[in-house]
Every structure is written in C-alpha cells, then in structure tokens.
Amino acid sequence: MSEDNKPIVVPNPWDKLRRYTPARIALGRAGTSLPTKPHLEFQLAHARARNAVHHELDVATLEAALKARGHEPCVLHSAADNRPMYLQRPDKGRRLDEPSQQELAKMARPPEGYDVVFVIGDGLSSFAIEENAAPFLDVILPPLADQKWRVAPLVVVREARVAVGDEVGELLGASMVVVLIGERPGLSSPDSMGIYMTLKPRVGLTDEARNCISNVRREGLSYDLAAHKLLYLMTEARKRGHSGVQLKDEAETLSSALPTGQKSFLIESN
Image (cartoon, rainbow, N blue to C red; front, side, top):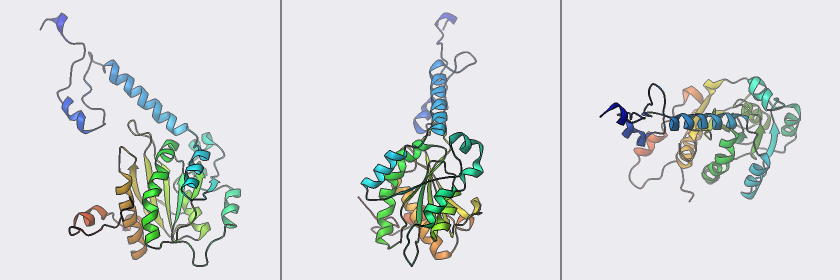
C-alpha cells in the first residue's frame, strides 16, 4: 500500500476483545495519538464523572419514589453544610448535623428495637442513588419482611459519607446498619452504587468493621445478585456476631452448591 493510501487510524490487533469489556482498550491510533472519536468519548466520560461528583441529590424526587412504595423516609443532613464543604472536608460527611441528631433522638422506636436500619446517602455520585436506590430496596426488603427482620424507617442523608450510617444506627439503637451510597465515579460508571453493612454500628468504627458490595447498577452487579449477597452477609453477621474483615462473602459459593430446586437466601419477589 502506498503512503497516500494508508488509513489515518491504525487499528489495534486486540480490537475484537472490546466486545467483552467497557474498558478503554484497543482504541487504535492516529500517528502517535488517540484517534479523534475515542479522544472525544474520553472527554465526555470524564465530564460525566465530574458532573456526578458535583450533582446535588434530587431529594424531592427520591422521597416521592420512596413514598410511592409505602415508605416514610426521614431526611437528614450531615455536618457538611454544602457540596464544596463535603468534597473538601470528608470528616464532616461522616457525622450528622445537630438538627439531624435531635430528629433521630426524638423518633419513636419499638421496645424490642430495630434489627437493621437502611441509610441512603448521596455520596460521591447522586446519580447512582437516584437511579438505583429505590429499585434495589424493592428487591431486598420483601425477603427481610418474610424473615421477620425488624426494619427501621428509611433514612436519607444529604452530603453523606459511609461512616454517617454508624451514627444513625447508634442513635436509633439498631443492631445493624446498611448504607446505600453513591460510589466515586469511574470513567465508564458514573452511576455505581455501593452497599456497606455494619453490625453493632457506633461512631468511631473504621472500614475493617464493614462489608462492602460494589458496582450495583444496571450495567454492573444486578439488584438480584446484590440483594442475595447482602442478605447472606446480614444473616451470617447476626448469627456469628461480627461483620467486616472477619466475615467473608461466600454467598455465590453456597448458592452454586445448592441442590437442584432448593431456594437460595434470596426469596424470589417477582
């Protein structure tokens, strides 16, 4: 082929592998640089990730979606007054502000206490919560009700970090807290939700006390599988008396080992 007839974009020999992953591989090259199309796609993905971090949670829409499902969420706020402070002071996002502490302190609770409280926090991607929180709750709450878990009213916390759930659980006297929170956006996943489960929540716990289920979204870990994993971890944490690094996620192994026809931890809700 003559120099004049050479293609502008030189294809990558690994191009066929792109069908198996959203990762940016085998993009080809134009001279020594990326071709224009993948370069622009990268810029768009980066812009979406930045937008996800700075986007304020649409609390009204989330609250309406939860109420339509029969929930009466309690909306609170962390000690971070606004989004810039939240991003600059992670410690502020780990604690509730004083009005929120007072709101929880006066909340009525049953004499036997709550087994678990679900805390929904915007985290580093409000898009993740707006997209995934309510549909995931549709999957996880029915089997908990069937198994007679005492579930506290849902709590929504604005400008939240994961550890704020420990304070919510402690103030409500809940035996366990599950935090649904927007994860730090990736360049192909600006809407990824994380789930953090902690037994015996209290202020001052560190990450070693939590179990994490990551990348919960329509293009990632499905709601059904995430709920299956979470229900296994919750059940085992209550049985063994600990969570975090002492509790391993063996849900998939156990599920695959079940005899044909035997139900897994997750009860079909559809």
